Length: 557
Image 1 (cartoon, rainbow, N blue to C red):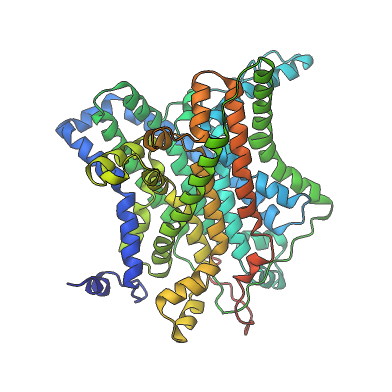
Image 2 (cartoon, rainbow, N blue to C red):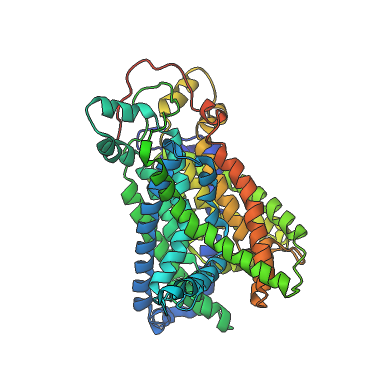
């Protein structure tokens, strides 16, 4: 049977549409690449034979399961609570300093988890800087920061931008006519947000929450420094202390199962409702809400997570840098690592978004069991520790793709496997808000499916593309295990420079590299973020003039 025959019989979507062969081939290739770590873990685990059950229970898996899921639930719930109001205020409200706060609110994403955890310990530990400030009021000791509370704080500060960026992209693409129609029906602003806006944001919230859950599942540095044992920390201990990595491989397969559970939960939360207009018309920019005397209250809501997650950590880093300079501590030469980080992160962002696009289009426009499986399979790598993905690609490079081994391209490939879900989630939530009739109209005018995707679909999902690109870029800038293992000999980045300085307890050098990381990441992030506020961001959303009042399609699904 030919490939086109397979498409005709097995790839028909629920509504009878057949995806083009080039789209299916691209999405399948991306999914197979994303599943390489799972294949590696299966190969390594085969040696355990029937002892795999004993291996799992020997490390008290049940207790670690409970602790891990408790942390995931707490971090995800708090991240949503923080991110949704911040997204609405920075996109739809007239708060002062809106653009500055929009950029600053996503920058905590660039700090490595062990750096964020170290600054939190320095600031909020029982004998930390905050306790020193409060000692004049008689406070001799702050509550213990270690454990579930401290780990939750660190991970919320680092992961709420996942939800924030996807929700911002959805808000920019959402037609304000939907909310205006609800207001015309007598709904107040709060009722309109709850009954119309929030349901329309559900795919974006679900996509961002999935990234939060998977990142929390895979984090090692932050939870280890805060002394909270999770499944990933158990796996990493096995990788670091055992010569035989079979046990770690078996435990990592269990981690894959947990990731699948999170994927199923996200699919259930997302639902199957429609999230676009029922009629084809112009999607115009929304009029910003006038908060009046509450404007500075809105600034406080947006500024609080920025203060705790960015300003205070940067203040601690500046203090370390000043102390290192006073003590004549030699700083690392950081120009070359900064250039390397910028180059490889931009390259990874562009290529990862290119790989994410066919998967997102297939999952949204050609819904079927197979397209859903392809989309879900690309998320597995994000839930695995970076060292597991890196070792799987070492195995792949040596045994399958020898020319790629010890090259920058294998490192970029690893970033794609790790961070592909960030691009897919943002593109998917944006594509859900595009009425498919626009693409059908273009096809009716004689354009091929490839021309429709390149000239209609891609421009319409640009808000999601910029959000996804910003996330992939920031994640690549700070990724450490994969960079340490897969980078060519002598290839240094800012993240490896931070790790090298921190491991030698040179906090001045650590601070210098971390501050430069924030600066280097901040400029492209500001560009990608502010693209959504300029007039060009609206050009891609305009179609023909509206011919009928907008419908509230799927708002209650």
